Each structure stands twice: as C-alpha cells, then as structure tokens.
Image (cartoon, rainbow, N blue to C red):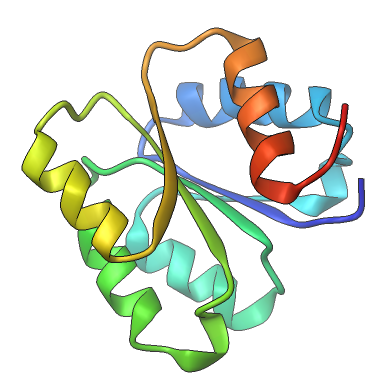
Amino acid sequence: MNCNVLIVDDSPILRAAIKKVVKLADIGEDHIFEAGNGQEALDVLEKCWIDLVLLDLNMPVMDGEQFARELRKRPDLNDVAVVVVSTETNKARLERMYQLGAVKTLQKPFEPEELRDLIASVLGVKL
C-alpha cells in the first residue's frame, strides 16, 4: 500500500508494537514515521507527507489534543486522517477529538487485527 503513516506515542514499546501491526497492513517500513509527542509529530509533518496519524492522547510536551488543535490550524494539513489510539476513556475528551477531526478511536489494549482493519477502513483499502 502506498501511503505514509505517522505513529505518535510516548512509549517506544507501544510505537514498536503499533509499527509491527502497520506493517501487517502492507505498509512498508520506509512509509512509517514515529514521534514521541505532539511537537515531534508536527516536526515530522513539516518534512514529510503523511496520510494517516495514529495518535495517543496522553503524552508529555504536547499531548494528542493539543496536537490535533495545532494540526487543524494548518490548512495544508486538514486532509491528514487522525485515528486516536489511546487508553483514554473520558467521553468528553474523545468527543473533543472528533470535533477536532479525528475519524476513529481505538482503545488500548487492542488486538492487532483490530488496528489493521481500522487502518484499511480509514485509508479505504481492502486487505
């Protein structure tokens, strides 16, 4: 599959696990980018075209909600799909993420097939 995915999570272990699942969605390693917080993610977006962001909410420096607010301020990045992948259960916060443009949410922990299917659904491809 020819698309670029950005994994944003402060846990290197979770980023590695998510990366493994993204590869199962037939996305090559050279199309997968990583960031440890929202600010790092914005830095990646300045340099690389990204189709899909897999975003944790609870991170230091800049959390997922702050990142989403900044992302939506940039007209050139409005078409980047954002999927929240988080342990967050606060319904009001998740609703705010949808208002900020998140297209889906996935609760951690998750089964690899759930994330793979979600990626395919958001990108509109069949795996």
